[in-house]
Image 1 (cartoon, rainbow, N blue to C red):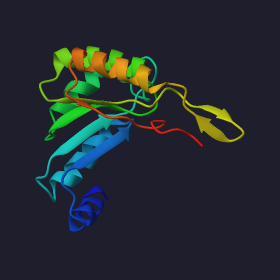
Image 2 (image 1 turned 60 degrees about the vertical axis):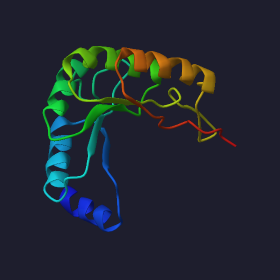
Image 3 (image 1 turned 120 degrees about the horizontal axis):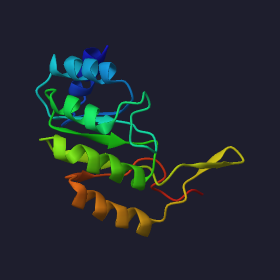
Image 4 (image 1 turned 120 degrees about the vertical axis):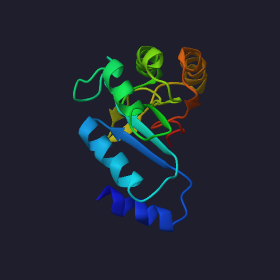
Length: 152
């Protein structure tokens, strides 16, 4: 299935593959194998984490970071689910054990649901402060996930 999806993206002219928001190591390994089966383009592999920095299945960044880095990928990291403070902790724990570029892509905090709408409470200044700290911890790529735009 991953190879089939990758082929469609290749036909569309992609420049790289960003495999993100995975919580199961076996699934992201299958995704990387599927993409590698049809392409040599760069791959970024990212796990999603809880507030404690572990994957949603409880795998610590000290374990999933090196396991991702052992795959045929170009960068590894964490994205979504939590805000920048949890991402910082995960990067700090992963960085000494990973020899590939690390990416961190936090949400603007955990959403608060009001009248069936998600509100993200982190300000741009708060996100910027943490972006600097995440870089200092070892990340080479910083991006933002949910909540990065104002809600109308």
